[in-house]
Length: 423
Image (cartoon, rainbow, N blue to C red):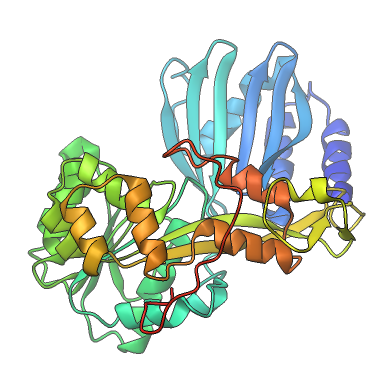
């Protein structure tokens, strides 16, 4: 978060009278405006013994901003509930709502949760519907973008976008849906079932789950199958019923797009099998898995260093380290970029490994032998190019593989042999 903006927000909050009846209204208005300007993805209101701590998540990192006085904690939380249509008198149970400000192209999801110190509230900012609309806006690598575009021309099969929470999966899937609609001039039937709908997409019949009437992702998908769809988007595959319904749709003449929580492209396959999906269904239904992470981009104030310790174990030739300046608010970083790996499961040895329910390291090794550039290889390349730092790579990817317990910090790029798939 830019330092001057943080200072201005703190000064604005300090200038308000906690005893005034409009304190909570004006305070929340200032916080929401500052969060949008800072490009925050989340706003945290954490109750403590001293008051209500305010933090912004900017470029994937939580930044402390201010502390609301203890005597106004209830009023601030109540104001957030009123804006999002929640019940102010329910303080002992989780609640979820949405804020849609007039004349603002930003929607926000509000989630409250009772804790020992009081109600904790997190506001998720979905971002402007005008940003990252198309595939060209996402910054996908040149060796991935053309292949993904070709896959979006298919008439059946599933494309999964995997990654941890906050890695931009839904943004990528929305861009894919817009790509299909624009290219085919909206002559294909596009539908979605989501939880929740984050952004309205032109030309897509979007539906939202409603647990009160038994409409969950799996049930909604089964009903949508009777709506004569050609392309189906499922907001997220979370459980076995949704996974089974989604992959069955991909096997019956529908192009399906969805998101999935997993640590790598290979792990996505393993997790589907662990859910109880039959290997032949995963092998036949999956067109590709696009795994993605978001890494912070170094600010122009970064400096190149010859210190070997700065590599932090990465096999890189050149290292730039963050320094911090007024432009980046002292963080050393400005903005983020995509780090991706693309895996196409239905090929040779890789296909046979899936049918044999092989472990994640085996699937990842076979994918690399077929030419898949792993997240670690792309991360090392980004460090060499001065886009990010080794510290940022480890912050996002960790230090160890997590699957086999082996150190994955040494990146040895695979050079595809003639005729191999080069993603």
